[in-house]
Length: 207
Image 1 (spheres, rainbow, N blue to C red):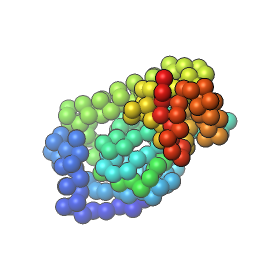
Image 2: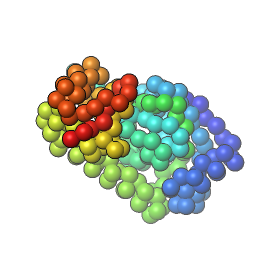
Image 3: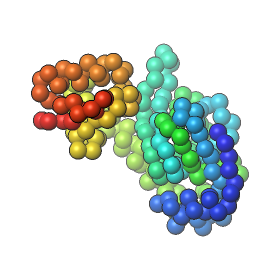
Image 4: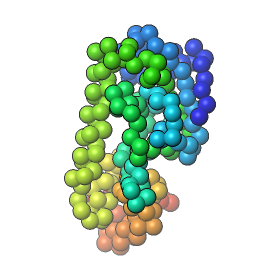
């Protein structure tokens, strides 16, 4: 992680965020954090809790089970919020966030500004909306069809633009399977006329 404190650039990013009109009036010290692809953005080993808003790039959030298995919780792009739960509680010791590509976030120190944040109804509304969206997404994943083939087809129908799955690795992460498993499913679905391959690692739903 690298931190940048250029006031003009930080102000420009804050203005471009959907949360800018609310957060711009908090009177807190914003700065930028930048991460390379594959770098951990949050983890139990990072001692400085930050409230962060994605302004460029994408990230993946996953849970490490007691057996070491990795379980996808969410993914996010522009305006995705990190640190919303840490405003109230310490970081979960099994949840990790990883930059899926080069990532830039608007950031502030939770410890330094917690009293200001908790005293702002507008900020708490932003946090409430963020947490509600995350709970809804996790509940939807828990209620997903049981078989991997059904999950893949539902994912393509409801989560992929125009029914197009692009990138087996990203799809496998979301579907909690390996890229090899997903490739096998896609091959079977293609043979059965359910999907059509339109490029390397790209398939369109045809049912």
